[in-house]
Image (cartoon, rainbow, N blue to C red):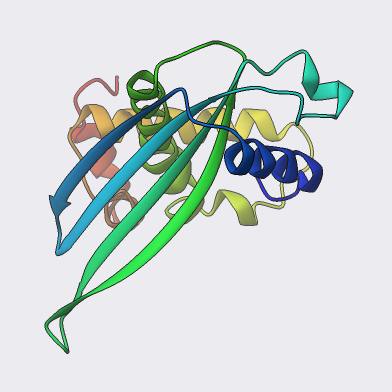
Length: 174
């Protein structure tokens, strides 16, 4: 849920503040000079959600707390930050299942949408007539590069722009 839904965010805050969680799931991950602890708490939707548009569509409210410790390479000490976010569901999942679903959502966001925004500059596109066609072409190009195990999409696109003949070296292209 994004912050532009101010009333809904306020309703979810009330649920977390005044209700006990149904269950909780905790997972820690280590890597890349950081320690990340995720705490997922599942709450039953109560009377706190007053917006009629959402009242009948929400079954569970999930709060995710991320406690992130990043290594500061200059001071050689960990710096800690906390983040809280809410997720809403129209189905009843356990806290562990919700954690898996949230992680898989962000996997797609980071591996597809972020690459399209940064490498292919999709957000800066000025195409206004049938932009979905260009989106399909970008997806097609991204899928070909992924199928050929390309890790640096932006670098590969630059190399391909210098020599179009490189395109014929991809497997699964023709």
